[in-house]
Length: 216
Image (cartoon, rainbow, N blue to C red; front, side, top):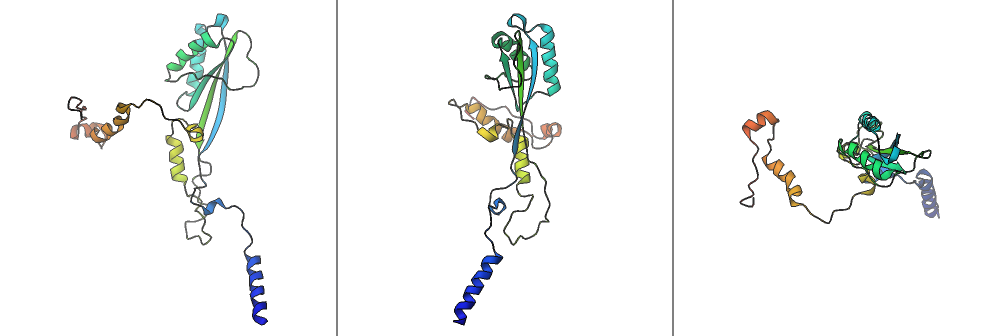
């Protein structure tokens, strides 16, 4: 009888001292520190009499693009009644920055007035908030939890290297056409480009042109 009572008492004490734990992501293999993608929409309304942009508005648009430091990770849209003609004008200015105009403008505040077009730049950025994080010292954790800085280096590098942060959300489907030259370009650069700085490396290991005649 005493043995049975001791076992029941021990089990009750164990249940009280170790309550049911909620979801603890820090105990898994997946890093808690992951890239977070944020989006900001910038808009400008341009006068488009007759459905085209005059020279003054084109210069204004170019200055606006330059002020935004337009580049990879940005998506350009044109909204309004004159998307056709004015959209081509916007595309020519965007081409100076190596950018293209995407179809289907996002919803923005306020309506587009007649005789004008609205250019929208949707900018996405990937960051890892809270990194680096050394709230706890790097020491053995008997609760089997991750260190607070676990995953910061990999996630931060991924967020910095991805050309279009939206790919971290939606991904990108592969094309039906495969370009072998594009795929071999990186291997060619790795094999033939100097491993040191460019100027001293060129004298030690000059860049070789691929020998296409021999199929190499």
